[in-house]
Length: 264
Image (cartoon, rainbow, N blue to C red; front, top):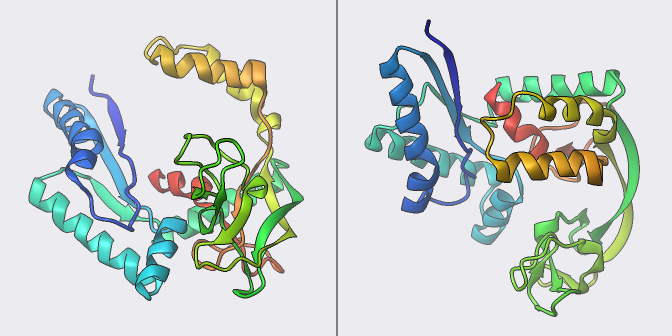
């Protein structure tokens, strides 16, 4: 009996060209896997698309003096041409800018809210008075408080490889060179992962012999030993999927929340 096989391929950020390493590491293996199952007689759906949101796109747009839309469209069209030339057999290669993706992402957000899996919380975030906006992590640079590397980003230090708390950066500055940053309060929605922990733990406990040990072991340890906590799923941005609520203008769904919804 034939099986239904979903091949969920990594979504390339639409801010740079795809290189050989991307092809051999993500797209070619997925294509080989999909072709195998088609030949075997299974029903295959191989899906991916351009990740059009997030700060990598806006950072490039600012650097080139273009709109985020121009940057995304240019690289998305380049991805399509490359995959067609290579013969990568997608059943669907879409984009997070599609009407369908906006609708499904906002619907999932509202259902999570209606069912009590979201909560609101106020947190501190770097604000640029000169630019009149809150700055995403990748727009903030400074000295790493762990190793002293002077060009650490707000979310990660390339000097020591550590994940950082951007609020702790020493001598923080905007990527534009603006030094007058302030920590201000901003309110966001958080996904209540702790409330979902029992279901996730149960899911991880059953029928996972096909998972690699370096995946299943840390997953179970994180859920069962460390514990899950809420994660913000909105950001102060004007490029992305708007939060579908009144009085939440200027805030979008966080790309890490909405991008994977594209598989739906």
